[in-house]
Image 1 (cartoon, rainbow, N blue to C red):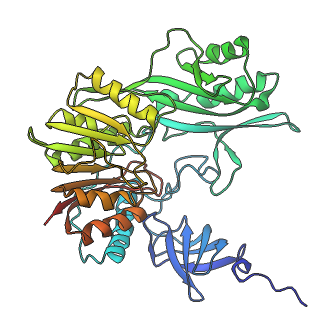
Image 2: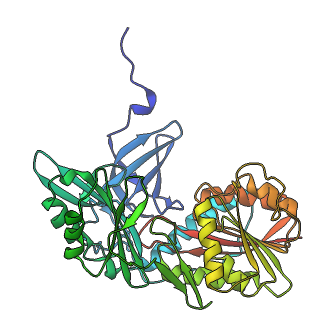
Image 3: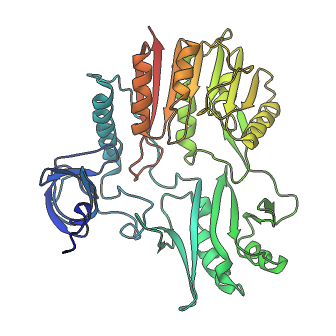
Length: 440
């Protein structure tokens, strides 16, 4: 019997000439080829491109642009020398002022299609600086034994391979030395291959570096990192997998919500919003939209270490925060105490499982905040509507799961009052959302 290749593998690797019709919510170009929809990275509406097929699925193709035959007037020359190889940014070929608008157009189409809404009540986009905005990043380190060469950088697009990076324009200037320091110090180690990556944090101007390594580093080896960049605070992995500071009396990282006069401490491996300026705008807008008053009881779900909870507590009667990770609940509680807030309490619970009766699970809330991870709040929204709050504020980092959850809220008697895009990650395909739902 003759071997017949699988249908979904036939076009992978082929180069296609495509006319770009529009873009999706991640600003990928959209075209059609032989009755299949094609999503093309690096292509803009109105362009004609040559693109290489990277995935061939039953209902669609994915491809990446290799040559632009007819360019859009919006196309610009990428400012970063590493853009072609590095997977960190996807939209430097598009003018920064147009990126968020194009992403919002795609989100608008997605939401109207998924929810059946005719028109969305869009509010002004939240935007900020498009360079030097990223205060936290993970940087890969790879040692090639054969060539005895250390590569430092970010993952290539759709690949585990590292793109060598010497500088990053979207990373905070406070963190700029990290690429040179890692390359020099790791190369000097007796076993360079034991360092796998580093996490860097700009905590309101103070650089923190977490070195991830597969074998212990001696005091002398730790000191080599410190000596190369003495202004930074260095951490590594202890034998039990816990992080340990390499310098004595090193301070815990913090960031400020200036408008609310709050200081939040966090562990170096905790989640924080990587764009400090947009995080402040986001919290400000949440307060403006919800308008918490002295009689309001508010439930903050997926509360983290209190980014929204503490700001709400400064205006509300009572705030309950619920978070899945115990260590984040402990950090949030400590942050409340540090900021002298005694009307906010935190609990640990897996919000994706059926909710058990608890002190926080009661129909006492006028307002509820949802700030889930990319998987969205499936399951949780069913419980939220049963609590019957007057308002629900949903902050989303994934328009696709937001569309799914918004449909549940709309079908449960809530109206979408306001929605705004938050360009938390300029030059990438990501657009965060904030939406306010009100009960009829």
